[in-house]
Length: 390
Ligand SMILES: NC(=O)c1ccc[n+]([C@@H]2O[C@H](COP(=O)([O-])OP(=O)(O)OC[C@H]3O[C@@H](n4cnc5c(N)ncnc54)[C@H](O)[C@@H]3O)[C@@H](O)[C@H]2O)c1
Image (cartoon, rainbow, N blue to C red; front, side, top):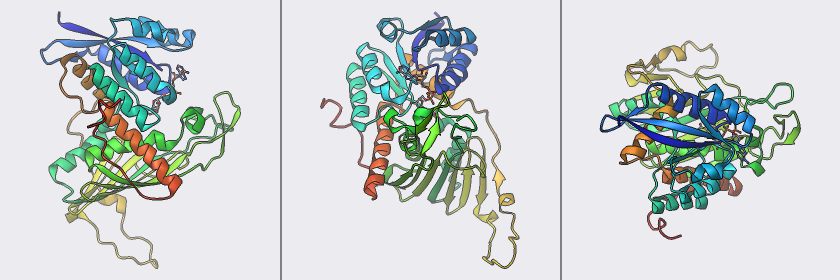
């Protein structure tokens, strides 16, 4: 047999991320390219079953993308021993319970972030998965974005010298929903539905900082609900009970200071929806989602502050765009390929439920830092000593 079938139960696939990134850009694309090459030369071929609450919607999605199997019965899907993987991209609040159920059914787990809404729950999932001996992974897509991979390349090449600081700007204007439809789901803006930009984005910033610049050691975060009421998918006005902006500062292992603003209430005047400006002794770089601009020390202009004359330096013109010396695949697909290989071949998969729990931990501490108005330490969460304590 040259092909190994991997049955994947896809829950929440009718949602924005489920459909666009996971079904269309990842699994459908992987199927179209003939699967993923395994260590012994065979290929792993994903065989998804789409799960959703609304039969009409799931069936239509399956038809549109040539997927043969769909259901509204999650219990029956989990009971099928032919499907080895449970994938979850449904809304966050239901996730932990469904993952527990899937682990009990012996499924390998792959899930969107945040893996749970509390760090206890997130660690519980990790412990259970380890005890059950199932494989597990968490979506940490930003690590495979071309812009961040270019930053990684700069770090590995020694371009920066000693890295001093990282400034991240993330966000764009999310319409309120009255005079223009909102472009994100309304649950994102309701605390009671596990919305809020701190839980949403600090999970991402945790793995970006940990993997690129140094382990996160402290957090200081201020949130804000700038827009107190919005209009939902049906046009009904609702109270926005969750924060829609977060202004955070992190101290990293090795002394790097990182500041990241995340906001659904900002208008973009920068290279991309997310940018990371990294300053080092030998050079600086600004990465967006796809491109990265750099300025080595020898090409650094020498501005002199003088408010009496208009600026003479074209600052944007003093940066150099990094070339695309390789092709970059969709970031979600890149991680799916690694996970599929991990499911069949085994070996290490670093981006697992423990790493996911670290993201939830940072979000939780970010919320606490805001409530208590102070800098908080981020204790190590290596899982040692807690793995078998439940
Ligand atoms: N990795 C990333 O960059 C990224 C970006 C955005 C969102 N996300 C995460 O992806 C997840 C989904 O976000 P989204 O923006 O696609 O949301 P969405 O609202 O578009 O999709 C949510 C899905 O969950 C389903 N769902 C909701 N309530 C349900 C219930 N009671 N039972 C069964 N299914 C239910 C919905 O039908 C829908 O299919 C969230 O956890 C979010 O944090 C990740």
